[in-house]
Length: 82
Image 1 (tube, one colour):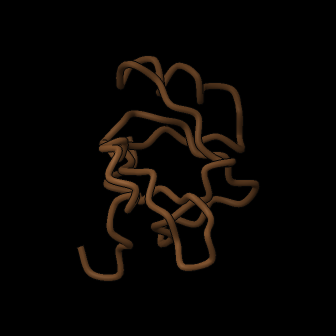
Image 2 (spheres, rainbow, N blue to C red):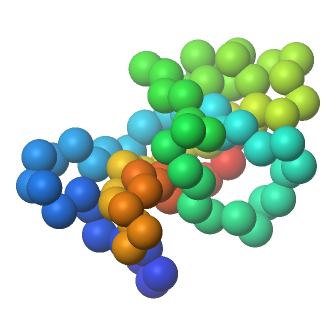
């Protein structure tokens, strides 16, 4: 994926695709990366969707990560909104 930081260089193999909710006070569908502090992972797509119901600042998604940015922060990349 163009513009994507490679998976965590520690080689621990922890980067993976997961279902999650993304915390965003203002929804911006064009945004494609998020800090780890905005992510809550879930075991299934349905759990992520249910967790976001009723919360206008959490959005269900499929994400990949974590990756370590050049600034040293852990970030996740959006694959798709659910």
